[in-house]
Length: 121
Image (cartoon, rainbow, N blue to C red; front, side):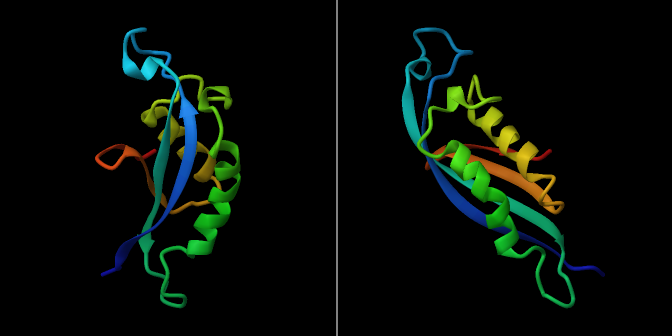
């Protein structure tokens, strides 16, 4: 039996946004900010030599340019995030991480301590 495990790294992104797909009287239609918690999860067999599913450094390297693009930004100005819901943000992150991280399993974006989205491409 092949052992399957999930490995993850968590990151924070402080950013502002305004949701454009909601009615004008919705609170999220106004500009507001979050310190998003992003969890990047890789899944796969445990390599018998390294003992890893993935090297955490590989996840961190893949994340670095995304952090630069998102942190302390107005998300609506980031190409592809014109309506930056957590769902759209998680898919945006997935699409940019997947080529560099073949074992990518999930991208979780939490906008508060108890509200978030899990995206699996």
